Each structure stands twice: as structure tokens, then as C-alpha cells.
Amino acid sequence: MPLMTQDEIKEIIPHRDPFLLIDTIEEMEVGKKVVATKYMKPDEFWFKGHFPDYPVVPGVLMLEMMAQAGAVAMLAMPENKGKLGFFGGVKEAKFRRQVKPGDTLRIEVEIIKIKGPVGVGKGICTVEGEKAVSGEISFAIK
Image 1 (spheres, rainbow, N blue to C red):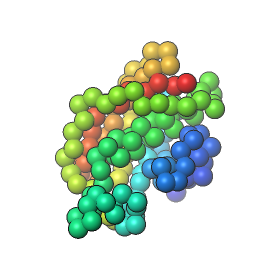
Image 2 (tube, rainbow, N blue to C red):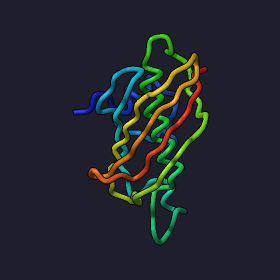
Image 3 (cartoon, helix red, strand yellow):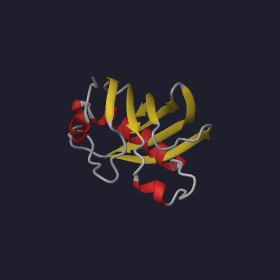
Image 4 (cartoon, helix red, strand yellow):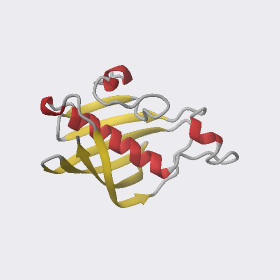
């Protein structure tokens, strides 16, 4: 049983279909760390063009999934209620495994630095324990 469903996630972050890219929150320490999941349905919009004969999840969308998960952890803080989280940058992103239709991505983000409205999260996405992507994401809360 997840800690949060997609409907509960929508109460915290403003993302909506087709761009709400996380399904559940499994674990969370508000303002510090979060574990989310995303099941890759075979009919996800990006698979039609990336690539028609060899569907894989675009790496940039996995980074966005990390950003959305991190935003849930940060925007769940009482002082950030009703605010927005904006992507500020990506550092040292590494793509190690293709993610395909039918895979479930486990998204882990740890907030490693906060200075005022700006912060940094360290993220890793895995499929069945195998690393798919990792990197640092920076963000601004407004």
C-alpha cells in the first residue's frame, strides 16, 4: 500500500496529465527524502515516437520524474504549501539502463542542500534493483 496515491500527489504538486510522471509515493521524510514509483504503461505518449520500433523511456523524462518526486518532498513542507518547484539544473547525470514498456521505475531522491529557496537533490532511478539513471538536480521554490 503506497504512502500516497496519484490523487494525493496532485494535492501537493501542480502537474497533471499528460505530464504528471509519478504514480505513487512509497516513502517520504518531508523536506529530506522521498521514494516514488512510475509504471511504464505500454501506451505512454512518448513511446509512439521514442522509438516506434524500439520503445524506450527518454532519459530527460526520467530526470523529470526525479524532479517531480523531489518536489513532493519539498512542497509537502508546511512553509512551502501552495508554492511551485522549478527545475534549476542537472549535474552528473548518468544513464545506465534502458527503461521499457512494462518496467516499474523506483525513484529515490535525497535533498542534500537547501539555501533559501534553492536546493539540490541527489537522485537514483532503478528497475528491479538495477540502476537506470542517477544525478543531481537543482531546484528553486517560488
